[in-house]
Length: 386
Image (cartoon, rainbow, N blue to C red; front, top):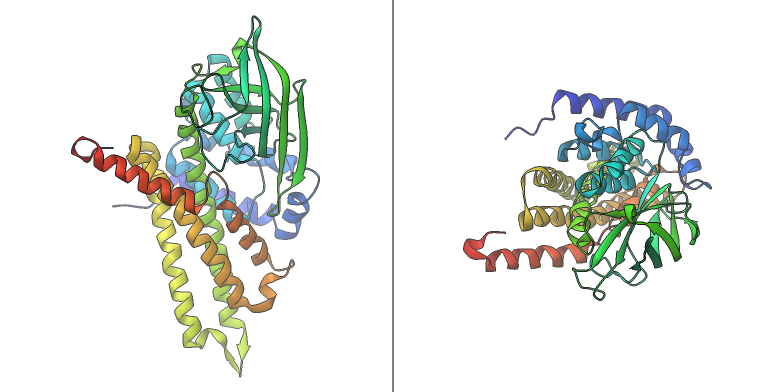
């Protein structure tokens, strides 16, 4: 099988890598990521001009990509540069609108792709523990439309998002897949209280409280009560994006560790000549290549697999990102010694990001359990079909 990217994707990757290297150095990145904004609006607009956001969506929606490998190319470059910009929210909200939005809602995808609109998914709730069906926020139908009430937690860039895709319950109880509905909400709507804070790995998140937020009937995305399938669909895009981002970060951490082993000397020789360290590094290299294979499988599954087969490939990639990400973070820091923990060394920031990626859209344990459950369901279906 040919794993070489198309010429267009290679050109996109080269453009992004050059731009990130020139404009997103670690010192400048940390000023943005840990600042009041959590990112750079000016550079986010430049990412849009380069096509990084448009590559996440198909041509019919105003983009020029939208395939699994387009998404993986973009996020692998972002991971390599430790970019703290709200592209994940753009991807998830944009794909939801493409899949189930009205024509007016789909038109907003062009605004997202142009970089003028920051979008965020408001789904996780206090204590939800990654379960897509654990939704307690409510939307009550009225003569004028809907009224939203409830709380959402750890909403990436939720404090400044122009558009919020909010999951609510219009019927049923928490953990019921049926009865979940999604709404497109203006980030400045009356009744939304926001508590924004810096994340430990850079960027910002927010706790959102919705109190009698009035929405028109046009705010509903998709069919009433059938939002679970749409959540699962867009979660798949997020899992691929995070796995690819983790791979990009792993490659940088791996390379910096190799260079350190080749230059750091003890007893007059490079420590990379010590057999014990060579064995540890060899194991690390093999695990990173396993991660690369998982991302390739996930990118292919986004486009070509359906049902349980798609979800298993995506959960496998996210599980691998969690397992290998923690290993890369720990081993790279240990092989660097005490300097690996310092703020000034970029490695420490890559390690933090790798660990935090594990906790977005389900951690290692969650996706291992999900992978096993999906496999059991496939085995129980007729002829083992997903």
